[in-house]
Image (cartoon, rainbow, N blue to C red; front, side, top):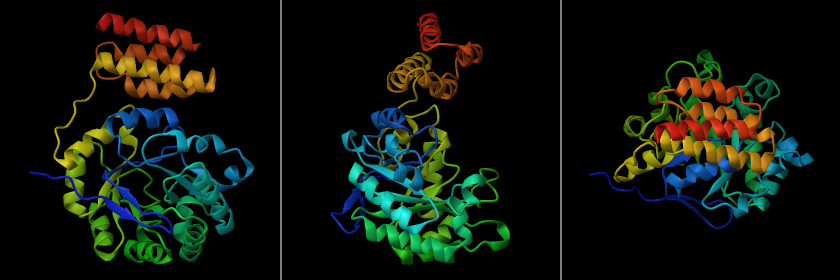
Length: 331
């Protein structure tokens, strides 16, 4: 019989933070906005969710404010993930994020995108551990909320030493580490190395969250058994499936796993998300909604044809009409 684990305590320099849910929703660029987080929250009210990754420079200039300005009004814990290669800029951005209501500050040291890594941000920091440590120290000194890090096993297989790398981050002041079980060189290819995550977990005193190839409740249970990690982070598996975090949380807590929505509920969900995005972003909301609709509208008769039509609908009204027609046919 699985019982709910005790909360994870993160101290920071202010009031302690207690994570009651051992499943974290990964920051996803262009995906994990306020509307998406609201959907995830329906199935996972206590999960730690994240904003989209925020460039410290953009936040400094005001361009990234839309990603953090409404945090205080959202229910449940929400972290802000920052990236940059300049300690002072990261510290300033962290202060701004804390003021906006960030539950904690996460530093991205794992993004494999070339335009970010080549400037020394994201996974580029793996190649400069001393700079990475200075960034953690600067951010931890700038805010009272906990500071965490999301990273990878290493830059490439020939330079792999994840235990030493992660120990350095812990020593700099990271209070929780999320470890993706791949190198930067792998990107999202190949299989996540859960054994390497287990080695890091055994070597560190701070909580370690396992990331990589967790796409179902069964995956999560197997991952925790293999790694001994304190929790899991799910990312791409939630695209089109905002209920996944809640399903995994139920499995880890020993509760009945809620069923995945059926075809009709998926169509209603896609329509709701479309309308919310258009209300928030105008006609640009349709462009954002297209990818969500393509992920959500699967697994039922006529779904491929519907997705084809939705990707070509020129207006929000026409896309909404397509979803309503498909729902009526199912209904």
